[in-house]
Image 1 (tube, rainbow, N blue to C red):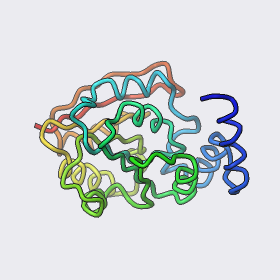
Image 2 (cartoon, helix red, strand yellow; image 1 turned 135 degrees about the horizontal axis):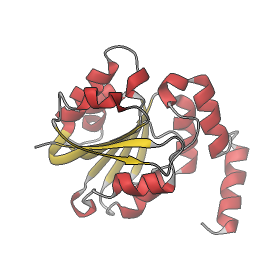
Image 3 (cartoon, rainbow, N blue to C red; image 1 turned 120 degrees about the vertical axis):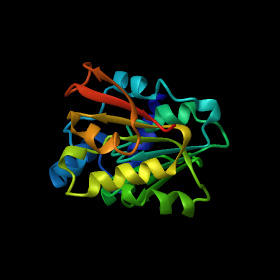
Length: 204
């Protein structure tokens, strides 16, 4: 991003009373550590690896749970087709407000809501299925029943051949994926703080 553009963005955010990305991330972690799950944003290498298996040419709807300060957003929007849609869902109104100021791409929409309600959310935006769903939500610390509800809802909205892309800091999330989407690939990304578990769950 050119320096002048970055400076203009910072001035716009300050004028709107919106903190910097790192300030937003730390604020979100301190207020809602159970929902944020990490104190630092994901590394660029993790972002590239998680998105490496996406078939962008055949993606019409990309959904993200818990986008936070939008660490994945520029990479997704860079690859997403001009007629595709990107819906981000977050329960934290501070993150939602930040992203609405930060990202003005018409393909991008951020919703203040729960990932467990993804079916209703994509229906409200004119879609029956999602091609890919991305999540960094900390499944291991979510309230009882929420992880299973998200796993079931995600399996419901994914099209056949689509995938649930998950990056986590605990392998516990596997227990909330495999009952609903059994075909799961797994690897680690060590170049991240902390090192992350990566999962691609493919809907057959």
